[in-house]
Length: 152
Picture 1 (cartoon, helix red, strand yellow):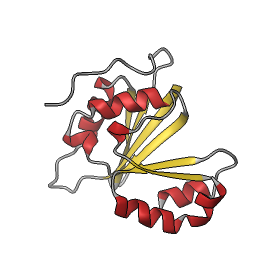
Picture 2: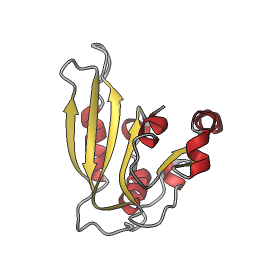
Picture 3: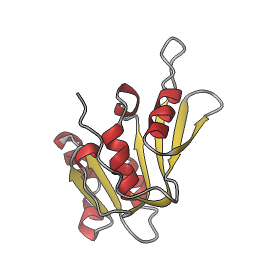
């Protein structure tokens, strides 16, 4: 749904959507068939850690409810994002807010992005229903970053 909302508002350029799930991409392809045909939408089946765009190819990145940024250190994903985003560009990670009894993962997401080289800001909706961690790629960050050792 997010791809369609962005695609209909594009004044130029494209939106590239990646997902490791063939099922999710099949749904996105069906929902965005016209935009895919016109070239406004590019869909690619790949995990973020394996995504290899041109350096600095993107002005902004976003994800909704992607748990790997709080269930892992997301080191490989941060490296990909740092390389894919141009200087000063941002990644926005949006999540539904924690239930009263659930763990608050916002600070964990922000800490992992910061460890990955981003300058972060955590913003919450006033009613607690959602939060967004925005990570800005520093203008002086090298692109791409040196490879970290693989995860154990």
